[in-house]
Length: 184
Image 1: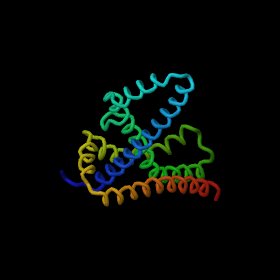
Image 2: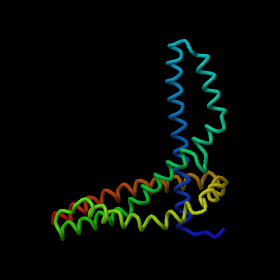
Image 3: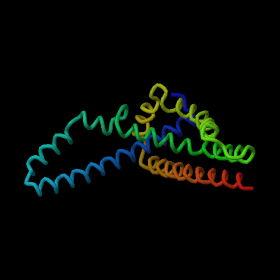
Image 4: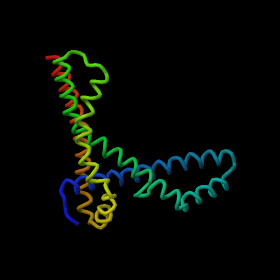
């Protein structure tokens, strides 16, 4: 497989966002089942609780629905989070563009704002989508990433955190830049 650095980077970020989604969904499942257990114990339905819990734990359809790498809820949420964090970097330019237009033409109507804000994000998201989701490239990378050692996982987990935090900071800086440009 040809190693494209941009493709590799985005697929790695998606992989670790997916891993965090799986982790958080499992924690959420435990909390829900604990609450369900307390209610069933209060209503004297413990046998019903244990029966249902075992069905969900062993049901491959449920496991695939929640944690499946191709169509699961976790990969869907990871896809959205990757799109949000990646788009936050290009949103900086969107905010600056809106600030310049606001300064030059006065208050923008909602359609002009959405157009000026959405165009840079849309244009920048196309290569990211092609790098990750065209022909399900991420599945090939996921198999490769699962074979990596613990040191590699720690390093890329940190990079994923920095990528996400950097995206939020860039989004805020872009917004404040727009406010600054508008008010000068």
